[in-house]
Image 1 (cartoon, each protein chain N blue to C red):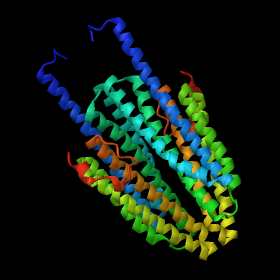
Image 2 (image 1 turned 180 degrees about the horizontal axis):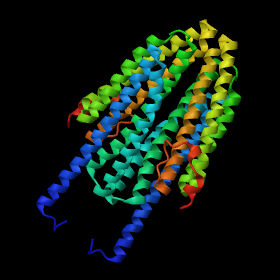
Image 3 (image 1 turned 90 degrees about the vertical axis):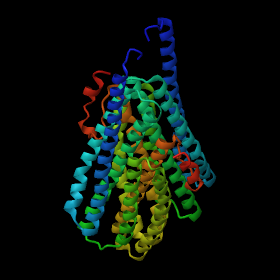
Length: 242
Length: 242
């Protein structure tokens, strides 16, 4: 290393920064596709559009391919650049975030599959109001989590973590309403169960958005807040150094 | 590096190997705890033992703490040793595997929470046969996945991947049986729904065991088989180099 001239090392470090930026850009592209998958899956259900649902299921391959590609890029950067400190944290956070995005994609596929079953059985729209409400909330969480990642914005990330609590309580009350539908009408059991799986998938998507937000805090603060009660997170203590 | 004596570099590399072994040992310890959590959660349900179920819920903190600790160790090894090739793959596989083990722990907690609700409501044991069958299958998958990781045994890992398909079909047929119970008796809806959540949790545990097995293949062969249809995995092509 001592034979390296300043210009040379500046060149290396500029290249390295470009590679890190490239990883973030790829992650955001993957996030954009995944956001669209969730939106399309819910639209397919609400509009009874089975062709759109089929497309969501087909597109899941693209999401999977993006994760594999991103993982390969990250592994290559780790092996070639041997990053330390915050650069290392960034690469690890990208690997983790890609895994959560891939799982959000899986949940979108599950929603699409249940939507097809529901549309084909033509069993009314019990629970659709709840699906619409929770899906809008959860999609906002995914969008905010991605934005907080792109901007290293811990304040927005903490907002996402708090939103997840709210989604959980909306989910619980929707499940109670759906159980009542089932008890009132045995013929509703099968379709309402499908709506329950859809709600469960949405709630999971919220959890993954929450994970993404937690990686942002880890990234910026070097602080692992997974498994910390959101109410114990003092925003001041997290944003002080920001 | 050229001033380094052979003995010195041998010393370094021995220390490094010890650190990698230590990561594997820690992962196996975490795996052992998680296996026990799954077993205890199911036993709590089948024996109606709410105290055991409470213990499972309490112990989830330990699982979470083990993941955080393991992640920190992995990050430290990456930063300090800057491993390449198969060593780098090992550290990344440990990070991924710890994340799946943590999620298996979450599912065990969910099973325990549903078990408490079911025992307290005292609503019979519809679906318990199915839970026992699938839980035994899934626990074997988790155990085999961990063993395949410990021994870098790709043949055993592929066995786990194939088992997951079988569990999925057992899960589907159990869900159909449970839906029939619901339709026959509206009072059964609430307890049967709890059993459905338990089955869903078990099916997820199978998915995570499947992930663990896929990391072993990635680790040993440098081959990413996630998102590959298990039937397309030619065992010969994977074990040829083994």
